[in-house]
Length: 93
Image (tube, helix red, strand yellow):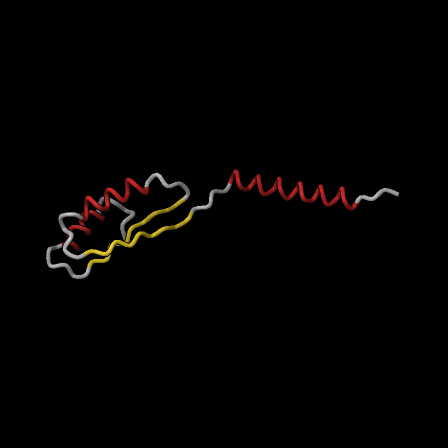
């Protein structure tokens, strides 16, 4: 009489590994990342900062990166600069 338990366990393990490898090759997991940028009186700098962040973080793979700019009622018009920037950059919230 042959023992097949060890062989069966090996085949099941091999099948599970094959399935995992199959899905790893075909399914890309995307991590969502939100970068929070607090501002106050940053009208002159905000467009440059957001452009540099977008460029630096744009090379990160498997991540959906968006930006949330929080303005503390700046009197210099930071909000207006962010709204203008947002019209051409959809990753800004």
